[in-house]
Each structure stands twice: as C-alpha cells, then as structure tokens.
Image (cartoon, rainbow, N blue to C red; front, side, top):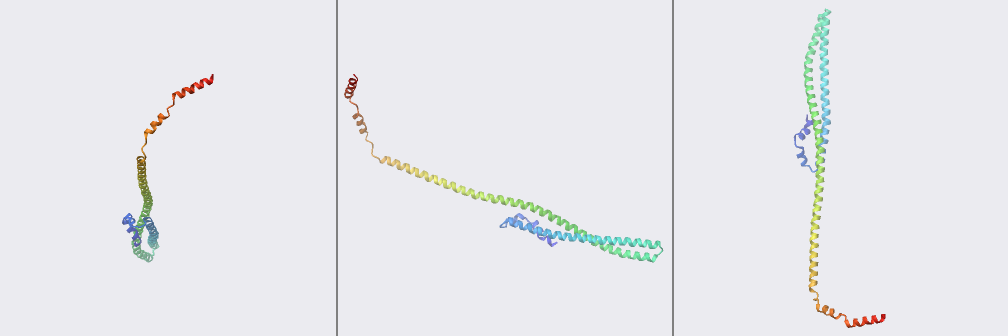
Length: 225
C-alpha cells in the first residue's frame, strides 16, 4: 500500500497552497499529474495482481469443494456396492479435504477483501486524477487570465506615463505661448508713439481748390462746342 503514499499526501493537502509556493505553478501541477499518472499505472498493476490472487484462491476453493463432493459421491457408490472399507477411505479423504477447504475459504475471503480494497483505491485514484485534470485546466486558464491582466496593467502604466508626458508637454506649450504673448505686448509698449497731428495736417493739405476745378470744367465745356 506504500505505492499510494504520495497520492495520499497530495490529496490530503491543499494543492492550491502548494502551487502558491511554486515559481512556476503550471510546470509544478504538470509534474504532479505526471507523478499521479505514474502511480496510477503502478496501482493498476498491483490491483490486477491482487484480483488475480483472488481468482486463483477462488479457483482452488472451488476445486477443493468439487473434490469433496466427488469423494462423497464415491463413498455412496461404494456403500451401495457393499464395499464399506472403500466407502470409509473415500470419507477419510473427504474429511481431509474439508480441513483444506476451510483453509482455502479463509485465504479466499482475505484475497477477496484485498481485491475489493484495491479496486476501491484504484477507482478513487482514477476519479481524483480526473478531478485534478479538470482543476489543472481551470488553474491554467486562471494563469492565462492573470498573465493577460499583468500585461494590461503594464500597458496601462505606459499609457498613464504617456498621459503624464502629454500633460507636461501641454503645460510647457502654454508657458511658451504665454511668454510669447508677453514679449509681443512688451514690443508694442516699446514702439515709438504715433504722431496724430501729421495725419491731421495731411488731410487739409490735400483738399482740392474749387476755383481750379471750376476753370477746368469750363475748359471741358468749351472744347465740346
């Protein structure tokens, strides 16, 4: 029964807690499954051996029982034939076989009990391995989701960093534009003041002479005549 020691230890512990301690849970659980399947092969061989022993014991018991019935039958025939001594010998053989039958019955009962226990342990191991296979698939799926989430977190950190960089860039751009506006304002303040009197005098300097325009109009009319 020592063949089930590792299986018993694993099944009685929290496999998730064991995986938490592993550097690579996926590789560790695969190794557990390989170990269990290897144990399953050994348990199958041991179970088959125990079941074979049960069958051998049963066959020996049946053969002994058949021989007892045979001696009983011969004893009856001997008496019917009037051969009491022969009948006695057959009955003595029957008695000897009956003692052997009791021993064979005890051996068979033990072999049958062992076969039942081994078959139960074999079936439980098969069932538990099937359950662990399903849990392995679930754990690996969770690991894949966790890795994806980890990548998303890294991408999110990069995006956050880019957003911070953009925000800083915008602040620098606003600062430059503010400095440019201040420089332009200062340039306007430093420019020479506009002399409005020059514009005002030029307005009157360019006023047309009415007498000159009247003389020109007369000249045009005279030319038409």
